[in-house]
Image (tube, rainbow, N blue to C red; front, side):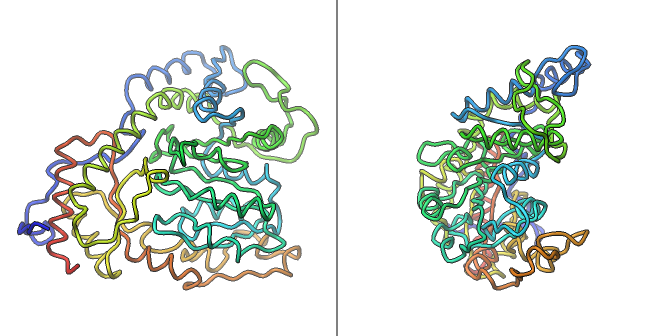
Length: 422
């Protein structure tokens, strides 16, 4: 490793990065086409996806296009990634007291969606990419396990082949949380299309974005119908898609409103056309930075092209949590977009999860239907996950970063490494 003697920015030196960096993905590319799509919907005075003075059916068109892009027949747009998870869980029949295996490393929305359906999150260890470890699933299965929720983190695919083998062996459904990995693939198959249901997010930080928004996809028509019906007041009104009313039909149920607006659908229709090129640019950026820092004495996850081809940044580990925290502080001072993954803590370390706080006395934690299955959470329950997160350093990369930006990011990483006792 070459020695870099520049004084750290946090010690009064010049930052390695000389200009602000835009690490966003879809949001970084918003431009005139999105503006035109929004104005078209506003001019039509038809912002609601099912009717209006001059309905353009932008959301329905987006559903058709992204289903084709992913290579499956059914896609239902909704209001958020969390809504998509809710719809996926409902489609799979998850209800009061049912257990859903969730990785210990994920955004809290994965947990919130399970609890909102009355399900019990059961936390599993992760692998070196901080994705659900298939080897950790089988010991957690019980007669109440209804689903497994692999989370494809930061563009990296969960190792789905062994996971699906376990799920099929035990007759457990799989809901892929693909919020952070729209467009990524596993052995050439698009993520979100491998399990029974896939859920996507289009929040501002995602690969394509409408500010907020979500999508549920599946190969199974009955699962699709259940998800769509639930998202539109349980089927109180006939569903219209592509100008055809009564697409779902059948009995109405109690549901809720999780619909996507026409403005969101219009924006996403434009963004979808940029997805593959955006992922390719980030992949090239990642390889550029990795090649410049790969000789550093830090721990990188093992290269796995069938899983990490479209990783959205760089992940590595220091020897101790103290080193990792110091590395992140110094890197931020250098202007490099960085953080310890989820603050260096598992999702169950959030107080509301640890203490099972809900706003009302509801399932799964405070109701008679699950009293026979009391589940408690505690720090230390997934020791490997906690160790990895505490030592993690993540660097975000974006499609609008040019060669100068990438060179400066690599310089910042090497500069900090020279000052941290590795």
